[in-house]
Amino acid sequence: MGRILTLADVEAAVKGGSVFACGGGGWVEHGLELGKMAVTIGRPELVTMDEVDDSAWIATARRLARPAG
Image (tube, rainbow, N blue to C red; front, side, top):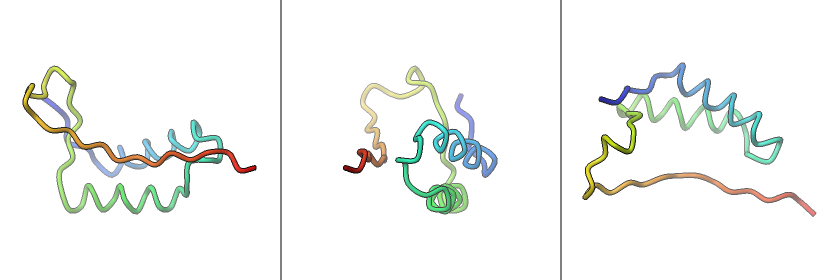
């Protein structure tokens, strides 16, 4: 069974993403805003791929940036 994500999870994910993005991943405030909206409006759940039905649809959202210059 998966785990319902919380605001603490959002904050940890944004902090971690900020480190790995090395300055090219967008704005921290924007990530926090979208994450807070997700856990306020819905109940996002973290699951393993074994828990996902073979016929399920999965949508991912991400933004890919490139170095300037």
